[in-house]
Length: 233
Image (cartoon, rainbow, N blue to C red; front, side, top):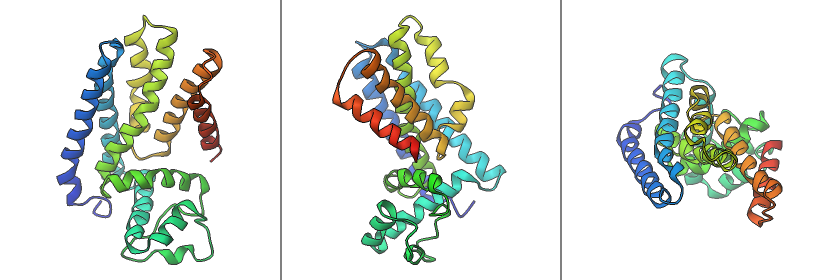
C-alpha cells in the first residue's frame, strides 16, 4: 500500500474533492432552470467519486494491488520522468513506447511503468491517464477524483441522450445511466472500464445528434471519429 499512497493523499484529497464538487454545483445551478434533470448532476458525480474510492480501497486493502494500481504506477512513472527529461517524456508518452531505448528512460527515482509496450491496449489507458495524474499531483485518490469527474461526463451525456427521447423518465433514466451499482464500482476509478463507458456515452450522444437528429455539426462528427479511433486502441 505504501507504494501507492502518500501523505498527499491525506492532505490533498479533501481539497480536490471540495473543489470538484463546488464546481459541479455551480454548473448544476447554471443549468437547472432550463434543464430540470440537472438536479441529479452533482448527486451523480458524488456517487461516481464514491465508487472510485471504493474501487481503490478494495484493490489496495483486500487484493493488495491489481489493474488500478498498475495503471496508476505506470502513469506516475511517466509523470516523474517529465521532471527528469522532458524530451524522453514526450517520446515515451506520445511517441513509440516500445522503442529500443525506451526502458532506459526510467530509473529507481522515476519508477518503472508496469504497462508499457507489452500491452498496447493497457498502455493506451496509461496515455489517457498521464495528464490527469499530472493534475492530480501524483496522488492516487486525487487522480481517482479527477478520473471519476472526467468519465462522469460520458454517463451524463448518455443520460441526456435517452432523456431526449423519453423526457418524462428523468428519475428512471438517471437510475439506469448513473446509479447502477456495478457500473458505479467498476466504471468510476482508475480502470480501463471507466474510460470505455465514458467513450460509449459520448459516442452514443454524438451518433444520436448527428445521424438521428440530423444535426450535422462538426463537433458531433469529430466526437464520432475520435471515439471510433479510441475503440480501436
